[in-house]
Length: 495
Image (cartoon, rainbow, N blue to C red):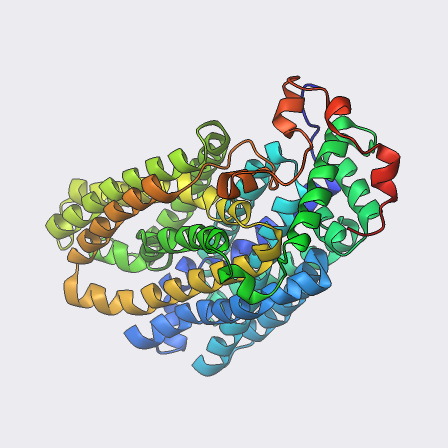
């Protein structure tokens, strides 16, 4: 067999709905609108609070929703996260004061982070190994699709002479939650969750649907199924559980979790949060203060970042996760230093070439970040976490991601006021350290199933099924390596 077939159309639609939910994370447009900042009478502190409220809810979701995902299943967890997000969007749209808006944003943050915890877990566990980079990478790439929609809507409503200038962009977010709720009943559950709870026949069917167009006798399907069953049996036999303490119980578990957390920290402290959520402030510092011009740049920035992210997703499977992260972080470090230098020289200047050069440097920085960290952010963590700690590990990842972003978003305006262009230089120096951390500690997961990745951490794979890549390349005959027949595997009622 030369290749693994693509996922079923219904699965691709599921991934699409999840991607598009990220529209609600783009805050550039509202922060640029005078009608928004004037209505809530925002100063430095309240602007930070309104923006940071999203991550307060996200941090709470990270601490609580991993257990929910393990108990009720990946699909049900996604459904209730979508419901929570939709109700929160309605509350945000109707906000009458700062307190009401902040509470709504906290709840929106909870719902979206519950989804971004469960969604990558689901996609990683359901997609074939050679589709995982595209599935998880493009999932986060479409953050920029949401960003383009948000930027376009905000650009249109900016001319409204009422609070609907910011209420309409808020309301549009709810459309994608409705799509989530409508599509979810038609997508399959994670085969690994099904196998863990003893629904092995259903697990086999889902693997067949996503790997071989429903053919349960396909050698690839049989090998992947056996890997999953054998690995879950091994993990249970050695006493691994779904508890929170399992994440720190062994050195291997701690290493897995530390790698997942490193992705959260690096992706947040590299300078991207500054550019993503305070673009208006950066452009003000660069000498571009016109609201319409800033909104136009915001649209261009999202389109540019989407293109860079898609290129990075492609190369994540060609170069590997680790080289992609190193290249991306190295480039963004250089461009962040350039942003700082140009801001120092031209920040208060009327020299148009200098101002345009600063904007170009911001675009290059965001492009370099998007090339690597946009696809890798939700690709790498679920790969390095094994099943017993995957949902809770993604919960901790989400907590750290939101907690660090909360710290950066709330503190940046004050740091910007106090240090100006120097803040970019300090951030760039930190990014140099990040490159060294990735180089020394990251492991490469490209081309392996989730069960085969165990060998990178534990020195052995916990199944005698041949690696799927070897079967695809014709290096082994699966009938000779897999001892259980398809009838025996399909008839297992528990693991």
